[in-house]
Image (cartoon, rainbow, N blue to C red):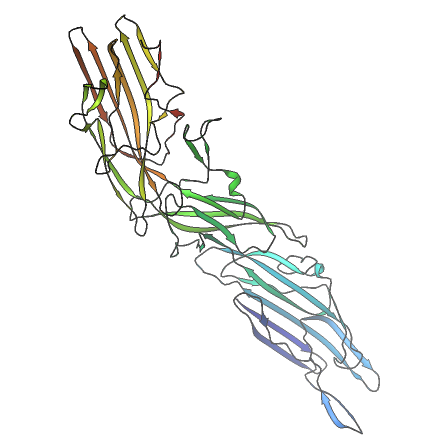
Length: 498
């Protein structure tokens, strides 16, 4: 920041005019400054001497910030003379910053003024002064508080007149500016509102801590954070009175966690592919409350960051419905256990973003399940699950894989010896999850909806069966799997099976 002070000082008694213009330069944090003061209006020395010490002299130096209608006379024989004085000073503040960015920053302008009185002797020897009440001053059209501070929000790359005006005829004054630059940090990286800085690269599922720096201690309140993209910052059990894993976890945005100087979140959305990140904005509004009685000011700060997301594919491969006679019983199933062919297998690929790694997990939920049996006495029995759909398919994360690491499933229905007919159908959703390596939250990437149905009838001379299985195309998802209960492989039957 560079300020400029200009003065025009007139001394009508000596018929001369002194013009002064000089730079006032602050260092980067605007804490310290210096300026060139105008010399004595008389622009001459006061001479004195004595018989014992010999002649000598010294000068009286004055800084006249403002004077209007000032006329002093000294009629005594030792101090004779008249002074008529006029002085005007203008001080300009250059706020600094980038011209292209319409950014505003907080400034504290500390102002003071000292009123001058007539000196007891001709010239300015032993001139007395006293402080002017600070609340009576004016800077930038505002009155300071009792501490002399004027808090204002000023745009970058602008010129501001911070001349101090006092309700006095003759005074010295000054205004000292302090600039407060605000910044949002993400995991310790200061963000920029106009560009993504090096280091502001993150991945879905990663815990990201945001904080605001810059406000004066104890002044900032009423924080309100907002973010671009699809994110969460809290979790709870999805069913009242139940706990995970009996029910799923509900991830959500908790507004109460977005109202302090620091907050945390993780993202499920990101760029369109593993090598191309999304650019998101972090923003916080806040209020500054001033201890000197000045009205509060509401401000905002922004910062940009990158969010990467792995690229994945799922290719489901379906088998056939079979009736299998095993030593443990008879089963209507989707798959071929004799040839080690599952009902469905999920081939997949995943590409991690540069400089990020992780692992995959899988979650399968049962969207619907229907089953019925007819016994040898003609009674129909209906399968009843405990709770309501959707159901977690036994365990989270999913645990059945082939030797290559591909998840697979072979659902089926056991048939008792007193059963003559069975019908069953199930629908599922299988979701691939990305789990970041160093702390964070797993996030959904892709999913496949699939189903199967089968029926078998004992005609008395033998069994006949049929059925199909199918899977839709995989799709991108940012939605966590939800379930209300755990699916039971051994449901209740109404009425009970014989």
